[in-house]
Image (cartoon, rainbow, N blue to C red; front, side, top):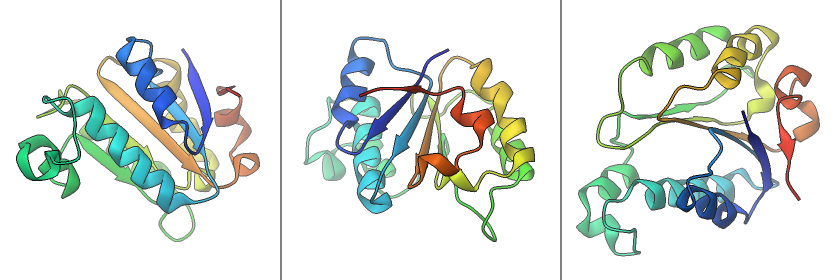
Length: 161
């Protein structure tokens, strides 16, 4: 299992790993601007999902890119904190949703926004997902504060320069 930690503007490194079939199944992104990280991540998802080798005009010409741009793909799950925490039930719902094979895309993709808000129970529930990854599932963990991520999650991350 490999989990990589990247700073903003390193999404091309992730994409090159994807092209070389060496992409980790879970990626922790430490950022100082969540909005920019989300925009970069959305572009990365288009690049790895587009059947036409993504180009800027794809959002208007490619059905998959159009659906990605408009959040219409059921194979992508976005998790946000609710009442300042990401709770266990949100992780259980994610696991249940991903029992099915991905539709439209090659991967089921989950994004945990503000992953420093995972509580202890949700982080513990997530560990098996991290330690025993299934094929065709990619996870992205976005944080603005790497130090606030629970040690159980952070300990499974490998830092990249």
